[in-house]
Amino acid sequence: MRLPFELLSEQDYPAQIERVQGELAKVKTTGTFARNLGETIYYELYEQAGAKGWVAISHGFEEATVKYAEVIWYFLQAGYSVAICDHRGHGNSFRQVPELWLTHVDKFTDYCEDYRYFLQEVVLPQTADLPCYLLGHSMGGAIAALTLELFPELPVEKLVLSSHMIAPKTQGVPFGVALFLARFFIAIGKGKNCLFNQRVFTGEEDFDGDWACATSYARYCWYLQVQREHEQYQNNAATYCWLRESLLVTKKLMQPERCANLRLPVLLLQAGQDTMVKNEAQDKFLAQLPDGRKVAFPTARHEIFRSEDATVGRFMEEILNFLEN
Image (cartoon, rainbow, N blue to C red; front, side, top):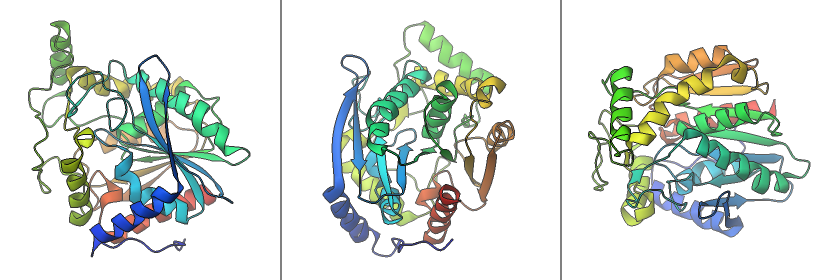
């Protein structure tokens, strides 16, 4: 389909995204909810009159709502209202460790319980008779998919998974060794400690490094500058508890009876140059679903939505075509 809006260009991107953020601020409402006492989750709603439906976004590991400004803008231009929250341990939501650069979760299902509450208590009351769709990227895809597997009664009509974290890559460390190390450090009381091979945020990142996720230097530099200026967006490392939970989520997601719960149409957007998650695991997951389809982006890295202009355009085209057909 032809996009019903003009894409932001990598040329003069900082000025364009600043303009977009100004326009988003005019329609944005913010709030918080707490499923449990003290566990305050921050969210943003972008509602517009005459919307076709609502898109709820589930962001990835070490991300936050602000990173999705461009994507949110496109959905609004395409006629959708948008809802997004900062997952626990990210952005403006509560933390279980004192270091803002460190990402921790006790159990992966805590993310899912939070997200179920967000959908049920915040998003769905806004939708009225409009359809609700989910877009989950990476860890956020695992959260979205597992939430719908665990709570299939949620009235979500379609699910889009971008670089879905079915199984994270462990950067050369065998799966069994990584899981053993995670469990060992948790057993000796260091579950909330930083992984030995990760570090505090310094503001100096490597666009071409082994963990590189974007192919658009302009989009990459913009968000890096946001992180440099705002401490709450500087997530840069994981705890041993987070590692254990990310490794074990594969088994949770792949259980046949849970996959059967995902009866809604599912679109997987797969990055051909992904260094963060295993594409073969995505394929195995998709093969178990009643209604799953895949679109490949051979030259894209993990964050397809932070690719060069043409790929970002195709990313949005595929999503909108899926939602509307």
